[in-house]
Structure formats: C-alpha cells, structure tokens
Length: 105
Image 1 (cartoon, rainbow, N blue to C red):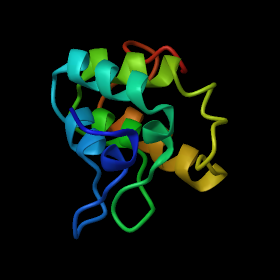
Image 2 (image 1 turned 180 degrees about the vertical axis):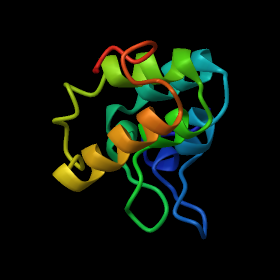
Image 3 (image 1 turned 45 degrees about the vertical axis):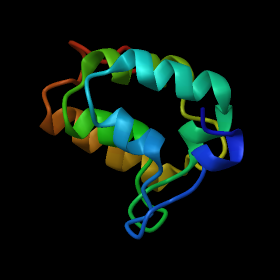
Image 4 (image 1 turned 30 degrees about the vertical axis):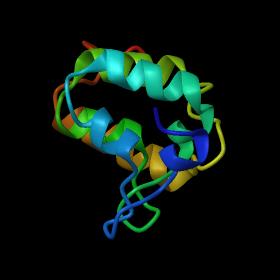
C-alpha cells in the first residue's frame, strides 16, 4: 500500500523498509517492494554506507542475496562504489558465501 516515495523513507539509522526486508528471509516481500520501486536496491543504509544486498549477505539470506544480485546490474547500479563492492566481497567470504552460494563469485 506504500507509494514509491514512501518506500524510500529512512528511519533514524538510515534504513528503508526495503533494507530491513532484505535482512529477513522473506524474498517475496523483497521482490514486491523492488518491483514497485527499482531504486530501493541502490539506497544505502547505515549513514549511506551499506547497500541492502550487504544486509542480506550479513544475515545469510541466500535467496534474497541471489535475487538482489540478479537485480543489481552486476553491482554497477547507482550507489555501488569500489569500496562498497569490496565490503560486500569481504562479507561474502566471512559468511562462507564466496563461490558456493553467491553467483557473483
């Protein structure tokens, strides 16, 4: 029921509802929200530093990770920097997602 603009609202920690959804295992909710507003995947959380995909990797939500990566234009969408891609790679290695579960590596 939220509008596209409502979905971009951030709380005091700079999290959108989408970013919080990415940290859960509910890939259907993530899909619905991203289909309504494609920019959500590029709105960084934690004071503009961590992308929603990073949140999904942190909580080892493999289905959400796979879906968000497939929608990320190979991490070339707006908001992805070399630094943010490096943080994501590090988190994938730490979470044992490197090569096994995450198609980007």
